[in-house]
Amino acid sequence: RLQDLILNFCKYFADFCEYLAANSEKWLIVLSVCTDEEAVLHKLEAFLSMYLRLERVTLSLPKTEELFDYIEEKLALYGLSLAEDGRALLFKTIETLRESKYFDGFKSVRMICQDIAYEVFSQEDFRDYVLTAQDLKGFAYDSEYVNKTVVNMEKLSKIGFTAGEDGNE
Image (tube, rainbow, N blue to C red; front, side):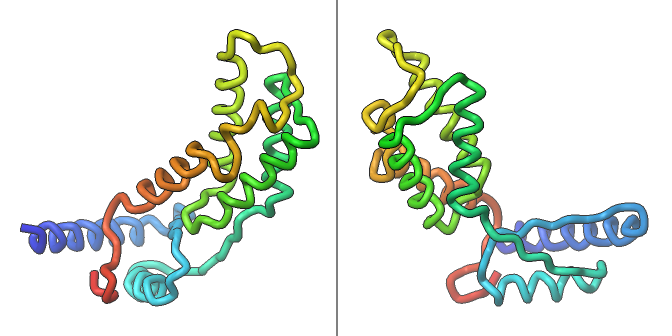
């Protein structure tokens, strides 16, 4: 039964928290929670504070410009660069991905770079190391690639236990 599974999970999680507490003088424990739902964070903090001393640190995603610079650096490692229209296309793609609440920053951008390099170097007629918008059309903000990437980010974020719509766990 689901309720039994949840109760067992809670018991094991509490045991795990006790283990962490017993070793907290030796370890720096970092818990990453990807949510902007204050009620969920508050409940989690209340529970964890029974075991550990907490300090909340909020991190924001890198700016689009930083992510774009990262793309250019990574593509340069493959010997690739971007024409102006290719730059504009990828900049808009990054902006579109950042709008997803599941966007995970450099990890997603690194994957795009790898996929671009694979796509470019797997073409039989590859000749130019300067990528244009035409070369990158499969990575445009409105492409199937970006739509699938957003869907996959959402799926990955939903793995595990989540609070229900009414706030009950």
